[in-house]
Length: 91
Image 1 (cartoon, one colour):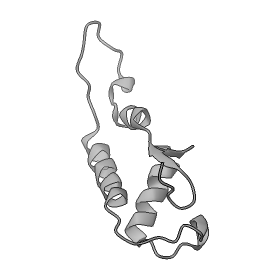
Image 2 (cartoon, one colour; image 1 turned 90 degrees about the vertical axis):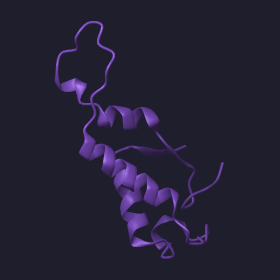
Image 3 (tube, rainbow, N blue to C red; image 1 turned 90 degrees about the horizontal axis):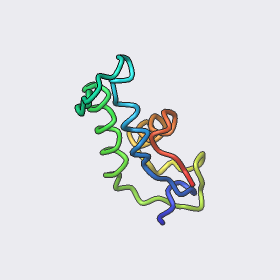
Image 4 (tube, one colour; image 1 turned 30 degrees about the vertical axis):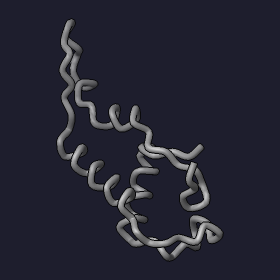
């Protein structure tokens, strides 16, 4: 497990699926196997995850979450957004 900002985080795929699912708004039809997703949420989550997964800055793990100024503003914004929506969690 690789530590990120002093903690071990993971992408919660089940929470992402629940977050994107639009079928909760309607009554389910018996035998229906299709899933409807909110395309705007999908594209935003995709972009936020891509930002986090492609961060290239070398980080000093000793600094912790609040004092780490080496990460970019897009990384911070994406990380905080996904953490707030509980789409990424820590162990």
